[in-house]
Length: 82
Image (tube, rainbow, N blue to C red; front, top):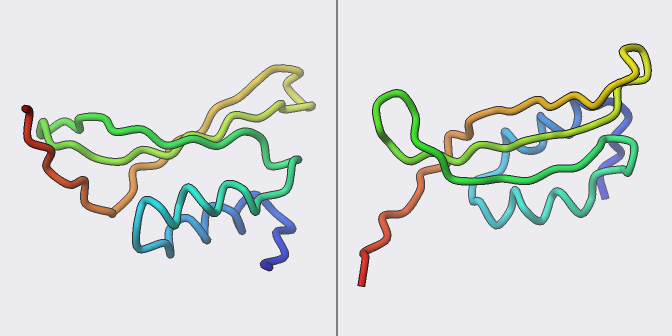
């Protein structure tokens, strides 16, 4: 099990993941203080489907909830409409 001591450790682990399943399983290993994590498929500015990871957490300094996100380099598979 990895020792996550800073939020950047969590983001670094996500960036090293090779599959979306690996990313989602990482969320369960992150410490509670790192906030809530989820991933969703969105369209980028080129109308390509991409995975975007969101991290929502409470910022004590600002006394409000904050959200950070990052687009992953993992390719989204094409799904055929049936």
